Length: 81
Picture 1: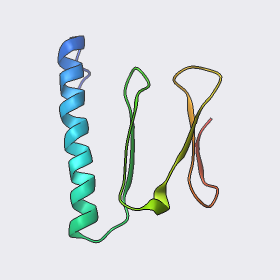
Picture 2 (picture 1 turned 60 degrees about the vertical axis):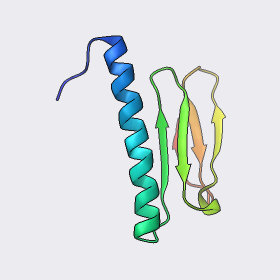
Picture 3 (picture 1 turned 90 degrees about the horizontal axis):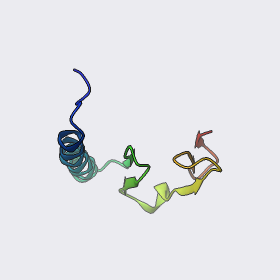
Picture 4 (picture 1 turned 180 degrees about the horizontal axis):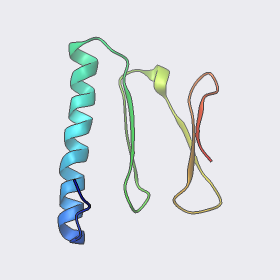
């Protein structure tokens, strides 16, 4: 597997794969009665998220540097810098 060099093709592929991933996360939550949370950031820093329950409501804050985020989950778990 290698990086897609053409920017337009890369963006189309990202959009298709992102949508497929969000769909699979939803299906997993429904079919298996699982609690699922998914976070995806694009190369431009745009956030896409899915949460099957309110338990995974995320607090997302932008840091001083554009494109860097801190994600806080209920219970205190933190992702990011």
